Image (cartoon, rainbow, N blue to C red; front, side):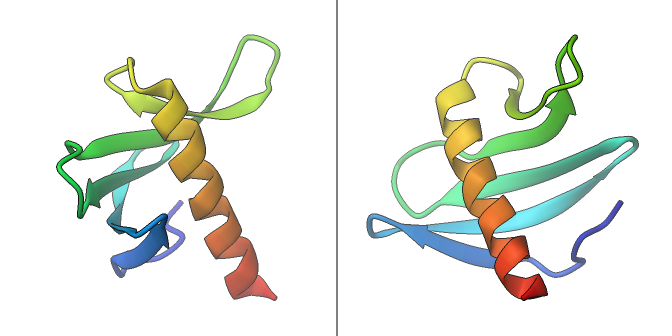
Length: 82
C-alpha cells in the first residue's frame, strides 16, 4: 500500500529527515536519512502476536528511533488527510 510516491521531509529538534516510502509486500515501510551524523534507518509498521500495530526498525535494534519516527510519519499523513 503506497501512501505517497514522493519523498518528503520532516523536522524534529533541528534535525531534518528525508523520508522515502519503500515498496515492500504486506508492509508500510520507509527509509529515513537524517541531516545529523546518525546513520539512516529503515522502519516498518507491523503487528505483534496480539495484533497490536507498532513501528520497528529493519534490522531490529533501533526500536526507540523507529517508534519516534513512525509516530512523526503517522502524524504527517493524518495532517494531510485533514
